[in-house]
Length: 268
Image 1 (cartoon, rainbow, N blue to C red):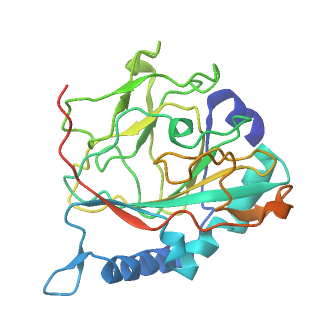
Image 2: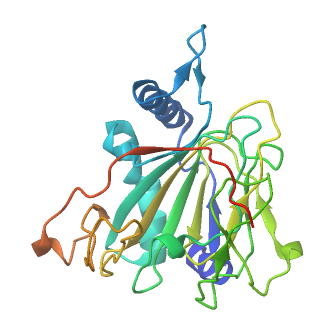
């Protein structure tokens, strides 16, 4: 089965050794610099302690190395194979996942970043080896196929952060599979795919840089926090392949980098 067929059938695709060890080292160094400059705590020996920081949103706006990773040739090759020649990126996220920190409950990325054509793809770059012990991704293969956004609600599990969980979906959790990968591997997954991660039970980090992509032909009606008013096409994007069919609209700078810190779970 070729890569596109595997992605379309299962909703995810693991491609090994996309990002080289020197590139991974450069990304980790870049992210440490961003964290040091934007609120991370330092140990007396100078090593970073991320404390309650779970994620940094839009780190590509703070560092050129992180921004360049959005257009990594090996990543773009897979994206154009699965999506077509014109691809844009609208988000980057650095997940820290320090020892003992929670994961994320079942969710679908299209709930947060809707597209008109179901073309949303997450490109999950492993910056450390991701294992069951340290909180790798889990997916429910094929759960993207119906194209349904399942309802969400609060949960009470200390396995996960405070974000709501998808619920009432017709899949047995026994069908979920862990996606264990090595540093430098990239996991591509569909925006409708149900996925989660569990708590990091190791003594180290499980760091990952996740970029979100979509076909450039689809407008981006992303207004998750109400800041964009009645917009139907968020233009805070970066083209990574091909041409932008909406280039005449120009570009915007709507999103600002932010640290997502650990928050108490809402009560059910």
